[in-house]
Length: 388
Image (cartoon, rainbow, N blue to C red; front, side, top):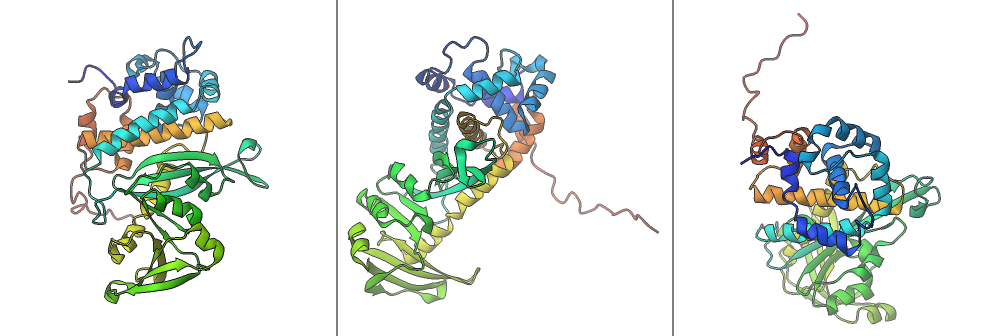
């Protein structure tokens, strides 16, 4: 039953408030704070994400225009752009990182039974990174090139649910392979990554953790073939080989055997060479699994297009990381709502509806269930004649 709550307030009810308070207390986020708590900061930034606000002044103007509804949105006072800017610069960004991890765990449990594009019993992850360009004069701490600044988001994506399980924000100059030193490799899981992560000493660490990896071989990959397995060339496979690395230092970095699979992709007319330490899955499954890595690219494209992580409300490192983590929290929150309300529509459609109904006092299930469009709506429409 709707008791006069706005759609925004009903959406925020899906957040675990107790876990949020634990995250705030862990980093003393409300220490000596009198009027603008960490919850107010999170709600203001969440409102900005959901309604596509462009700046701090834009956030302030919109919230003050709706001052009669702020209490019903969970905010306990007017939001000033100076206060919000100060909070983003001072409040520890790890509060929102830890809270996003709480939401991620909840989302993964909800999507655990969803099917994967490949018949697979194990958990599969895709590891990749994306560059978020910044202005060097405004963000000198994120120097990337001589005249360019950027931050890099390194994401480990659960392929079954398209939920980011690990996100590491670094300056743009940090190389992708260095992130492999900070990850915990789950035994039995499969990690799919592109050839930018080919570092045999680090790949051997995955192998020693009883986990599996699937990656592409570089052009200068040198190996010695030990055995060739039969393949069905009608489905694109060209070879399935057991190999060892060639070269003293390469063998020292990875002394065990590898599996080399060559596959011809008819859709792109490209020959792809995969490397893996999994010798039990069919060769075609390995090739199809690497194709699933494209989900992480779609995730990057989605959040850049539909969330506010390209234009930032503050210039400090703390403000940038705070905004990125709150944006990720909103993405995961919408995914949780989609699952709990059993909605069949895309996250993009849900966000579009929320952006224009966020201040209405309508049951959220009713709002989101009206996404169905009448079929063949334009079938009987007649085009008017502009000119005789």
